[in-house]
Each structure stands twice: as C-alpha cells, then as structure tokens.
Length: 461
Length: 108
Image (cartoon, rainbow over all chains, first blue to last red; front, top):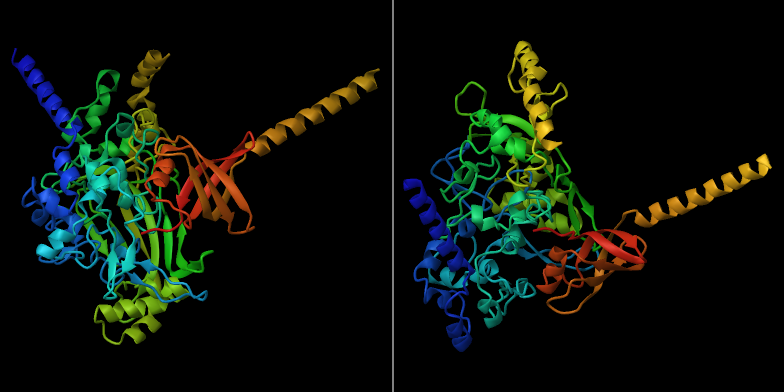
C-alpha cells in the first residue's frame, strides 16, 4: 500500500512538472502589449532573478575551486582567467576586440568572451544595475532567437558591444532551454564545432537524447545554478553536482545484467556506457595555420564524435594540476576512486624560460599575422608580467597533457560487456591500473564471465 | 566455342567491375572547405535546403543539399549565414550533393 502511494505521488509530481514545462509560458499577452524590454520584462514576474544570475558561473566564468591542486582556495578560477592548452587564451588576455588587419587588409571581432551572456560593456563578472540590465535572457530561453543580432559591433563611443535579439518575436518564444540553446555556446567551445567537448547530443549519439531528453533534464538548474559533474578539466562550478546515480541509483542493472551491479562500487557508469570519445586530440598554439580568409587559427587535430577511444584511470574526483599535466588523482587502494574513461588531449603552447610557467596568449596578433610570440607578448603585457617583449622572445614551446571527463555520448546498446574488459585483448590496461600479473591472470580468465555470457547468448538468440 | 564463352565472361566481368566501381565512386564521400555564397530554404518548416559553397581550393561553386535537422535549424535561426566558411563532407546521390557534415570552421 505504502509503495502504491509513493508511486502514485511520484507520477502525480511528474505529471505536474510536465504540465508546467509543457504549458505555454504565462505573460504572453503582456509581452505582446508592451513589447520586450530585456531583463526588466522578465523581472516583472521573476523579481531578483537577474541579480542572482550575476553570481553564477555562466556570468562570472569562474568560481572557487576546492578539488584541484596548486590553486589558491581564496581565488576564483574558470574561463575568465585559466591558462591551459585547450584554450591558451582567456576572457582577460583574449578579451573580445577588433583584431589588427591581416595581409589582405581585413579585420574581424574575436575573443574568448563572445559566449558571455552580457553585452560586453557589462562583461564577465560585472555587477550592479547596468549588468543586470545587460543580461541576454533570451539567448538561453528563446526558441526563436535571431542569431544575426548576436554579433559584435562598435557603438558610437567606439566600444565593442555584443548585440542581442531583444525582439518581441523572440520573447514570445520563451521556454525551457532546448538542446540548441545550450549548444549555441557549448558545441563550439575551444575553437570550433566539436573541438573541445567532442560530443553531439542527438538521438543517434546519446541514449538520453533518443528518449527526448534535453540538457537541462540532467543539468537541472536551481536559481540558475547549473549542476555539473567532476570533469578534471572543468573547474568552475556553481557548487551543485550531478551523477548518473542521481537518477539511475547504485544498482541500475536488472535481470541477467544484474551481475554488473557488483561493479558499480569501483567502476563509474561512464566507463561501460561511454565507450567512445571525440573532439580535438591535439592542438599547437605555437604555430597557427592560415585559412582561406587570410586569418590564422591554431593548428588543430580534430576528430568526430565517437571517433576516438578513451583512456581509463582511477579517479577520486580530485585533480592533479601541474604545468605539463591536468588529470585525475586516484588509485585502486584509496577507497574513494572509481575507474573512469577520459578523453586525452595534448596541447602545445609557450612556457616562460625563466619561471617555467605556462604562458597565455592574446589571439588578436597571431590571428591577423600568424605571429604567435606577439600574442604571448600582448597577453604578458595585459597581465603585468615584467618585460613582456623579452618573455615572449625567449618563451619555450612545450606540451601539456589534459584528461577531459567523458560524460556524454551515453549508449545502452553499445555499452561495454564482460568480454570487452575481461578478454585478453580487452580495453582496460590492468597493469597501468595497478593490478599485479597474478591478478590480471585472474581478471582475464573466462571463468569470470563465461556462464553469464552464455546465458545472455541464449536470451539474445 | 570455349574461347568465345571465355571472352563473353571476361567482358561481362569487366562490365560488372566498371558498373560496381562507378557506383562506389558516386557513393564516395567528398570533403571540401568553402565559403557560403547562397542559402536557399523554403520557410520555417522546410525539410531541405541548398547551400552554394565556393570551394577554397578550386574556386568552383558547389551546390550542397542539406537535409539534417540540426543544420537546417542553424540556417533558419541564422547561426549559419552567407559568408561563413564551412567544412563539408558530402556524397552524390541521384545527381545531388547531399551533405553528411556541414560545420562552420570558425570557433569561439
């Protein structure tokens, strides 16, 4: 009886939630009558929301980080100021601007903060009434946003402004963010489509998308704070976390597959259910290639979604952050780690000859001329580094290895099964994971999986 | 007689080879990078569109047929517009160059 009540209440709650999301957003007639006036219109029904939004990672591009080594716990880190080799620039050194003319006499606007949901005059981390009024609510919440409006331009004062679509038409299409709303920015992060994250969220590539789910079904925001996982390379967070088990529980497998439940204490869900990765595997910021438009871009080795295979490592959700390595901490014996899959990326950039520190780059000079050291000099000047010309001239190229979390491209049908790991030629490098030869012999013996797979075979055929 | 049969068989084999190879050739993926000179899409509910790309290497204009929902949506809301440089992979089906990958080369 008790179980029945629980199920009924859960269903009712789900139904109510669905009707709330499914229903047309209220206030349409008001917007039609008065037009859309930016966040002020939204604030009529959602008072205080704009101010709260200014405190989120989407606005600040940074947060305090407590699980990464070699960081100051009192400072905030993120796209705003990080220096690493997937994005060798950041919002500070590679601020949105009109770059110098290239050899063909052409210029363009570019910068890391083009994805910031402000208008650039009120930029990353800004506060106050002006910042609240500058929020582009509709870029995330409208399904009918005209992206011709969201381009940078110079205003009468010569300031670089990021345009917004504040039309009534766009405002009337307000809704829960769709996959498109999120992917407008997240798809092309890191220098192009699929470069950084390397995943496509559609019915062909992700079992959740195939079920009609959208990003915010898992990354369900509260007060615009977006829950995230523990990607070793994604440091800034709103202090809210998500995990597969939040929905699926710790023992998600049923029937013959129930045997897999014994793995969940040591094997992350992603390990079996995300057997492939994608996106850029290497990038060289020291040498840029000239494109057909006469502008230069970092030399990048790109791969499609699902085109590369992950590397497996123990991960306790804390991160080893060093000059030439950003990746997971963990071991099979610390009692906290699980084996996770990672996308490996290697980036080449300039290091300071004197201090050994990784240097960052203002992309404007190399984009126009291909001169990457000029980009290093400009960034060093912006950061107040002593003698920027000398730092740039003597900078030493070097590689950095980065482990990216592999948390999308989830599959049920193509998930790894027993033999994919326990077979002699399985995907796991048990030696590298800390197992002895005797343990590996046991782990790769068919006794472990034979009976179960025979039963599965009977079921399948 | 035996010789005649052999000749006929060899010719048949050659013909089959040519036919099968030509089919493969038409189904081969072609990759190109080019700038969009024109997008033609029939309204908000359109299920197909064409984009004309100027091939960076040859300078030739290539008309690409786009059927995938994601790219169509990017045409409709102008995330992809004329003047954008595109990395495109397509195959020729019934005389049409049907897009398999259609992405802007530029990033953030």
